[in-house]
Image (cartoon, rainbow, N blue to C red; front, top):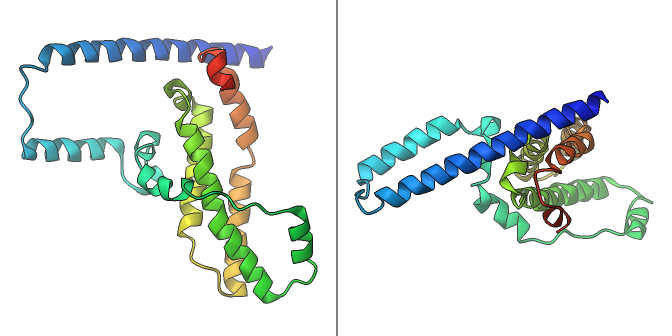
Length: 205
């Protein structure tokens, strides 16, 4: 019962937020329609000042970047979404693990290091195709941020060349696994809160 009340309250809040977003967008569009013919194009100095102002408003780089900023970083993401994930069969895993050597461990770590950013990039791209209102949900935003941070860490991790490198890579993997332990519950909460805000055919598409 308490869960249903929480979800219901959150749904009402999101519906109000969606209505406010539509109203603001309509008002902005109407304003632009009235002023388009009379407003001069900004000078280069004005454009640069607007750009710097926007950057300072959105926040600094690193993990402090906002969700809105990350949506515009697709130049990085596109290089990875253009690649197809490499499939591994159960038979390959069994044969690979029968006689483990140092070289095999290093090769395995480098496979995971290169493959994870590709798979995470595809999941992040899927998030970006969700309706805008879903992206504002705190639970879905938390998952999105976790995926982006993991993608950023793994794509920047240097090549594994020694067993010590492999150990550091495994430590990073353990850290990310712990951070992502609540991804499924977070996704469940986010989807349940947004279910009434998105048309059924959009959800099933």
